[in-house]
Length: 512
Image (cartoon, rainbow, N blue to C red; front, side, top):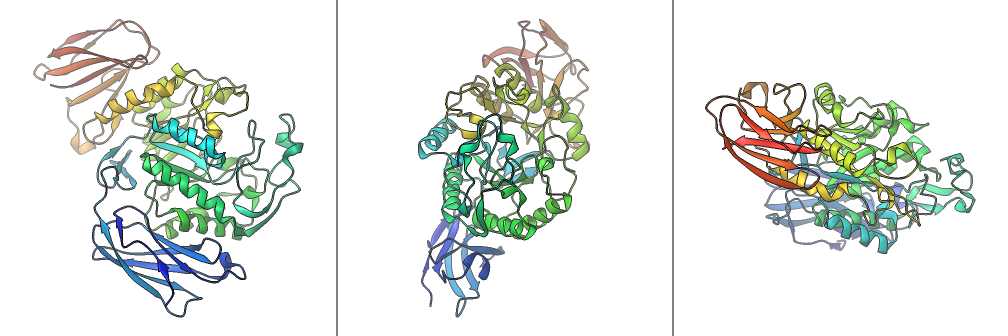
């Protein structure tokens, strides 16, 4: 009997891992298939294993119930299947399970706890030095962010001309000393000098990413993993179909058992010169077949949207298409796609030369509130100039802007929503943005239990309200920039709320 290493006990929704020895000769990444079946009273799940180098094979599983499990592992090099058992115990206080779509346009953890996404983008924070990674995690811990977008592959772009800490494949990269800020766009995935074996993964690269995913999990942050992207000089964006498929299967086998994983098929899929819709649909099919836990799935655009109505897409991951309009279009996207709308890129707070990276902190916060009150979920990025080109949007580190300091205030307000999620409500008036709790057509009530009005760049000195003559409402005035709350008492019938005549104010009205 082969020797296996595994824990006899693991939390529900945590990672159960089995490790065992096998052949290291030939090409273990392609020569052998490792599969496992995990069974309990309430579930039977099949998952793929993977080779982790030095003759070590692993198989991972995320239990969904608190009960006894048995498992059986099959591999072509084994004389007989490996068998064992373990216990899935109650989840810890901060373990709510994977995030799922809830109430059509929103999210909740698997235990039913509402999840309000407040995301940020740090494309390759995971591929920086240990020191910078620790600085990023420290910044995240002190922030309100509960989702972060980042890549498996390194990134080649302006402010990203250096080399990553590691590469996903065995081999050697092109000489990057030839790169300058003036010529970097001449180098693409077809650049000469790269020498990779796309059938042999660098296991240390993937083990390190797992540590980053685990660190995020322990902070309560979802890992929105960008599996492919076009900003490439190493050749990873133009692999052959069979090489792409091998990569997808390896990534899923390694990462799917982590409860905080989201799959983002691509950052800016429409910039890939050598991929077409058939390729993206094939990758999506692989995820749907190989991810037994059905994690959230999206695909991100540059100029042209993917068809977010495709059934495999669980939520819309959107980059604004208009220089000025972003959050203002959430109503239209909700209506068109009937899915959660996540604005993963609504431009970045910063001061670099690119138009996508130099909006103010005030404007970023305005877009956050505008998105939330329209029933969507905003995403942040920051691109302030730095003497060593360490920009949060790609490298992480420290935040230098102002908007992020105010997201916790918004998140607290979002968490006060009765039920799960807000929806835009246009019956209060055409000249203001109003949200009420999400409801279906069968639940519609003339008078809502909760209203949230947001005045963005408008500056009213007062607003009059009337809902009915009987219902008593508690009124609060919110200064979203200064993060202050003023209680304005209980009101019935028609009433007036005095306002300071300045931007970024909100009024919260709820049944008393």
